[in-house]
Length: 425
RNA sequence: GGAAAGGUGCUAGAGUGGUUGAAUAGGACGGUCUCGAAAACCGUUGAACCCGUCAGGGUUCCGAGAGUUCGAAUCUCUCCCUUUCCGCCA
Image (cartoon, rainbow, N blue to C red; front, side, top):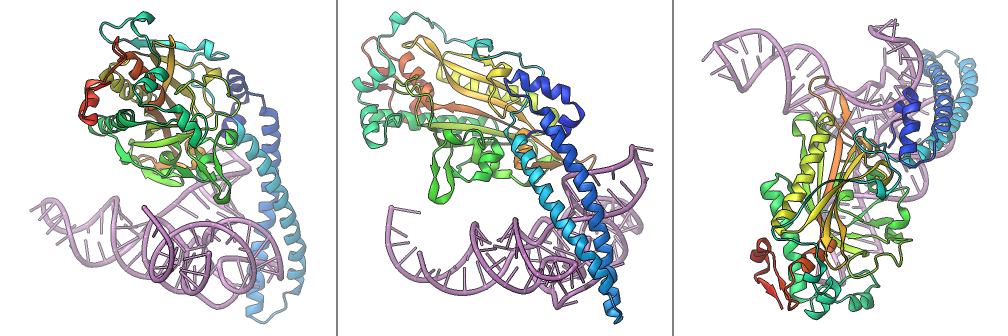
């Protein structure tokens, strides 16, 4: 959520920040509501103070058997006024919250200002030894490979649930499971994360906490009867572990890693990237989430990206890192790196991970705080998360990059102890 | 799905409609004592918001919301959640 104090104290800065994020300027509306709100609180608090005093007097008078009807009569009108003011105040605060909850986080100063994905900046890339971008080396795309080897069945997935719900078979299913386990184990054993296996459905409060609601409602599957959303990412349940909690400073950083299936309606993107795994309604993802001290969050972001990169190097998958520009940042992020892996068949990069620092944006929405040792005061902490990694597009890169001229798949070495086989043919 | 019980501070757990932000105990923190520690004793121990340069003052919060009342943790209604038992079930 947006910090109202920032708007109050530095409206110009917020105005510019919203413009950089391609967002409508609502600063004046906010300031007006904020001003109204404070005036009303001031007036009402005064009335309430009067009433509290008078009520104490009534108590005293009654105790001693004296008449209190004059005060009672007077307080009746005061109480009516209070009721009226409170209801006005509620309306104002609702209006204010609606705006504040709908505003995206502002970009950090280190983020390049830009309009769209065109303006993202490649910060580095890593290519396996002997790698070439030459398409001729690779004859089949992941859909063709999946069919030929009978490890992926998109048609039957569509029959069961609809298009975009992949079905893995045989060694394909094993490979997917191996990949998930490898990623989880590696983060737990080498990067110091503790493992979470979260619920795959979450309530409205949780969705609001991480920023999916109110804006992304249309992109999520919703179980009407129960008021629950299918999680679009494990970020939601894992970040909400500490919703409405106060952590101790010495606990930080808290680092979690967890697997979840991810469900996305992808409303409005029909026909785009519809082939195979490129855009699906359900995919698997291992997600890292960190709760950190505000002063450390940008350092922690770099470490987070490094944690995801380690896996790609071990898997021997070509990738590049993009620093997203202000206009391409997601709703909640202040800074974000995308990691894209290479698809030789598509001859382009595919997004396999997104690592973001949300600063206090989610913490403010979800009310996640820590108590600072030095001041003894509560403060919002910073949250970060990153995919480490999403399997579907990563699987595209793994299959296509590891195919032999005969159309077999060599299983990456690090996965072989999980799969129990070294080749799919 | 049926039945019952219950939701109070970091935790356990009191609470008669009128100084109850809330007894008491535990925990945590600080101090005394000690070479040090334990024990004992003493003290401290919530948050949000508003006004104020500061000092400080005020308001709200006992699951959530509405109601009764001059005044509600305490009375009424609705909802939510948790626990236990029964049924169904991986």
